[in-house]
Amino acid sequence: MLYPLFKPLIFAFDAESAHGLSLAALRALLRRPHILQSPELRTEFAGLHFPGPVGLAPGYDKNAEIFTKAHGLGFGFVEIGTVTPLPQAGNPRPRLFRLVEDRAVINRMGFNNDGMEAVARRIAMADSAGRAVPLGINIGANKDSADRIADYEKAMARLAPLADYVTINISSPNTPGLRALQHKGALDDLLVRVKAAAPLGKPVFLKVAPDLEPADIDDIVASVIEHRIDALIISNTTVLRPTLRSHHAGEAGGLSGAPLRDLAQQRLIDFRKASGGEVSLIGVGGIASAEDAYARIRAGASLVQLYSALVYEGPYLARRINAGLVALLQRDGFASIGEAVGVDCK
Ligand SMILES: Cc1cc2nc3c(=O)[nH]c(=O)nc-3n(C[C@H](O)[C@H](O)[C@H](O)COP(=O)(O)O)c2cc1C
Image (cartoon, rainbow, N blue to C red; front, side, top):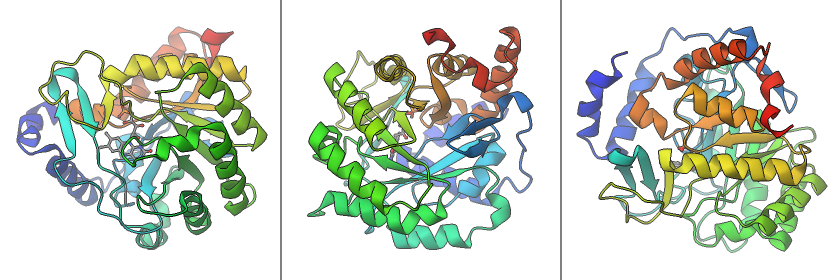
């Protein structure tokens, strides 16, 4: 793999410029995609067919610029966004930091995105051959909106017809007050209204923060079951700061990458226990290897996602994880990912 050669060059740019460059490179490259074809990795989930369990987490392709290329990198699904009804600029730069010594990232992007109309046009124009894997659209509220729940309703109504699934994101730490939608009363209001705006039968997922108390977890599980949400995505970035070595450690925002791994794994276990296996789970946070992905699956995740590790491991990480997962499944005598889901909780 060439990434170790290019990494110093990429790291010479600030983190946000490097991200822009990587998007441009992906748009230009990958004409001949790699097709995921290990039968062990195929997964049916929420009525959708996933050729592999490793997805590209939202935040990388916020504006649907390269989602048709994701399967060429080995991703079995891709989630774009967060998309808000109106375009918004996000927070002032710098707002994205590499914590190299910690293999981590801190971001306070603040839902910078082109808005739902521009994103919808881009998706509608993408060639259908590029939609080889399920497309999730992650939706959010504009920072200055007077009625945030109405923003989720609008984004759901506009974008769901273009998506294979929609994720309601109420867990970004960078839109002040957004995480309050995770609290019982607000969450029930939100889920009733946003589900009513979804086309019948469209899978709807909910993405939560790792920074939750046991009582919050019980409440969220009860709401998710009551409102028939199809899956919980655990988790977004953390506002906690475990011991970090990088000089960027004090930056405000959400922390992701290696220092989030154990916390996200623990929250997945907490949600699995609280739901007694009744709610489908997707694991995300600090996944950087096949072993990390496999541990999340064994703890109850039917699918996993990653973003930050791409910075350190390079664009073909998902392909390597897929190969590693096949070997781990064979080692343990499982014929498919589905057989391994939750085995550590039984
Ligand atoms: C720069 C950056 C931007 C992100 N933007 C979003 C976003 O818009 N919506 C969202 O739901 N999550 C967003 N995330 C969170 C990721 O999707 C993921 O939940 C989190 O980073 C943990 O996974 P990781 O450790 O593999 O990165 C963002 C993460 C990063 C690093």
